[in-house]
Amino acid sequence: MTDAPAISTLTLRHRIPEDWAAGPWAEVRPLIDGVDVLREVHPEGTASSCRDWTGPAESWPLAVSERPRRVMITEPTCTAGCCGALYVTMRREGDRVVWDAWENTSDTAAVPAVVRFDAAQYDAELARAAADRSWEEPVDTVARLLERTLADSRWFERWGCVLTSVSPRRAEPGLPEALTSPEGVDVEFRQTEGPGRPAVAYRYELFVTRGESAEAQVRRLADGILADDPRKTAEREG
Image (cartoon, rainbow, N blue to C red; front, side, top):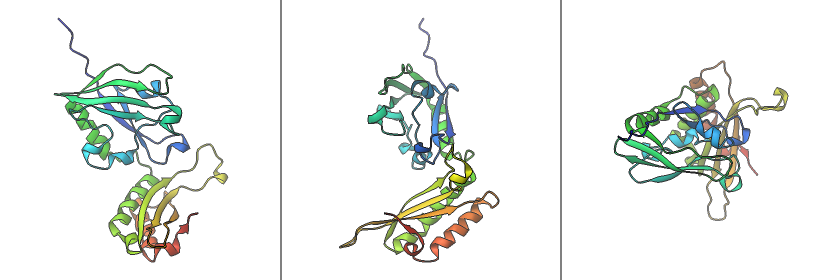
């Protein structure tokens, strides 16, 4: 009698990258049976950003269907073409989710074997992680809520501009406090192009505090931006 293939458990853990070049947002690292196997086979790689988990479920980085899909599951802070990346093919087979055909293009370590998950547990963990906010630091919460407030206001469109990003700004690790900027939120937008008018980028460098609620800070910061033409009060880039 042939033993049934082992069924693994998927756990998704938010982690703020220690490498400054990896970006300001948390990555969402997949653990298999509680083990960060990706760290073992591609230690220099980072997993998908939590920003990639904000859309519909079918767009999430680890979403699966019956059609096999090759996914870059970790990548370096430079580019996959430079330092390699870790890929896996994932698909749904009945009540199972299968990860196989692993490929490590950095060619530094062996790759995992075939991994099978219970599809119900897998889907539930993806939904839980997409909704998880417990990992957020105050600067993350302010950035997330401020982005929503500014996007919903459609304020930038009134002035012929497009909001391009809102992101937390963390103190750069490894530097003395005197040499690094305080924590805050960066808001970037650009003026849309038109006849005889090239696109121009603008930026706000906003500061957050730990003694004021995130909601109060968002109201204060948004009020300052929405009070006037943002091109007058933001810093022009370039």
